Image (tube, rainbow, N blue to C red; front, top):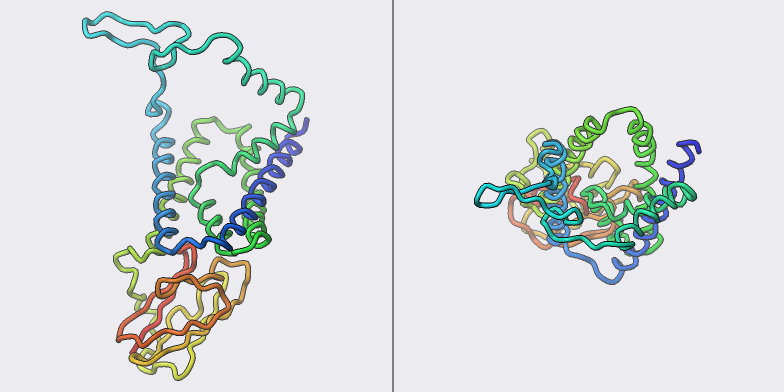
Length: 303
């Protein structure tokens, strides 16, 4: 059977599983909305888990806690566990209990390869991934089953070319090289995810200070409402000015409904866009806001 057909079924199963999960998360998001601090902690934890996994891949199989075939007793004599023992010396069950999973796998691989490919694609929804977790958070913030399914389906469709390419690469590159490449990619994704969580929670050391080159027209605060556009590439303008000591209205307009910037976290709360955010009188200084995934940041400078 052609490899492209098997890969197609794998991607189809992955799409179906992620769309179903997105619909469920969107439905749950309509009832329970996790606060920004909880989402930030989840992103940091997911990023750290991915980093640990990446380090294990980069260190190689010798650090993967491979089972040992024999251990030494205190007296120096070698001890060999029974032939049916586990790596920790505990006897494994005999008979058909151990053979049934292998038989089922062989039956699927030989007689129903497309079913096996689709099942494996569906199982990827269970793989812990910081990037996937971030998209799942966007699905939750959509607060609708249809919106959540669309978010997850768009994520799968965008990453489908990479998975298809990986299927062909695995046939031509050694496992060691693939493991190292996957480790580097996972390390980058883990650090990026943890950084997004720190940014979302406002836990970065310089998270509240805008870059110097972004300060334009800071000597003249805006009169009346301040308008900010939420685009696919962030918030524009990235820094706006407003008068301190008086109530201020921030008008957030949405340029791309599919971008993660469609939900903004400002003043400790999530606001779906488009919306008008009314802020109470603020002291002189800078107020920071981020998107729901902690990827894009904007600043309001009160003068």
